Length: 205
Length: 205
DNA sequence: ACTAACTTGCACAGTAATGTGCAACATAAC
DNA sequence: GTTATGTTGCACATTACTGTGCAAGTTAGT
Image (cartoon, rainbow over all chains, first blue to last red; front, top):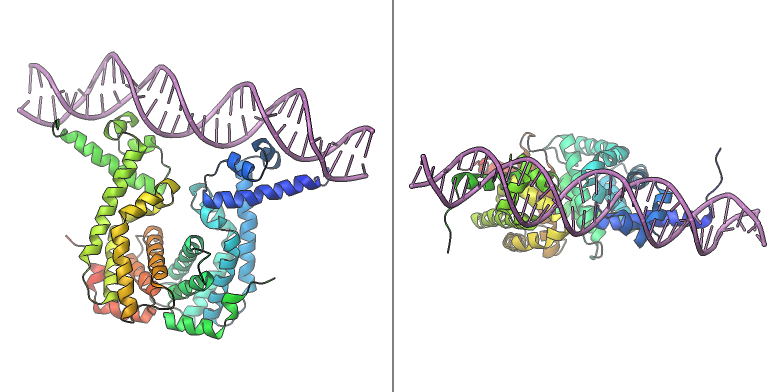
């Protein structure tokens, strides 16, 4: 039935294709199969040996990418909604530095739907977080919770994907931006981050 | 030399093509010439009678679009930087159709450069506004002026192009978002807009 | 009503991309 | 060292798009 484990070089090549696809597609969501294969040091023909078609490759990128993002939502346990949002933003930022992919693929009409579906758990977490913050008075209440949640999602995507990651304290800027959207004044955000320097610093293992 | 004025139906068709291109391209920056022509109720062949090639059409869209909202920057004369930013955001919101196009085209590697160049005046205005707001203490100073200006640009684009325009007080949400990025707390933005209801109301002539 | 201006469909050439079959070659695994 | 597994180049069919030429039609302007 299950034939056998793939050869080691084949496994490595498969991973190489995925890595190449991530960088190529985040630069240009319409990057051709040929470009992806070449930048993985392989031939176009070989790529088709690993993935049935373009869709299959994209599907795998979206699913595995989304899993990583979704996992971050569970890692945040702060009681303070402001802190929780700040930490989530910081984690997403660090993850996105490696994988800007979600933002790039979401731009493609054909994949925006499956990307959204794959990220449903993260979206759920954000929605819950927003409601909590609104209830305890730390987030803005001048718009409905659903609207605010959507705004946070969209702006996060923008900040994460279109901010120069090499700028000094780029992560800090991303976090401050998200807190601002939630309704905090910049001084409040500043105070919060000063009291919890671990949020924007952690490089993790 | 200058042959003669174009026939009236030809003028209308040309305008129709531009309008169709705006909506088609903001939905999908890679919309084909055929789709654009068809959605303008014309044949592909006719479009080529009005524009030499795809580039010429895009060029015209970018240039005329940019002119429209470069003009908006001049229309804002408030001394209060917060008010000025709010009003500019509101004006841009009302030009949403054009802004969406800019956002869509800016995603295309080939046109991001000429779009940026065409929007230089608006960018200049925003930069000046940001510096003014930082100096008088109404905007955040926890990041460099250039960074803040860029953030405002990017977030504005996102909010204007990806917010449901049919939602109640969508314009208000857009303006509040931009003010939040500038550093205002949501209550401060709320107070400001309450004191100047004309900002989010004006439909203009 | 006449004419220049405009539109259209069709045929055509060119380009770029996807996906497949196949034979020759390379190499990891045993 | 043998062999199953993997890689490659090439040819090929297919699709989708851009841009042009031209002859036949339609219509605005006078």
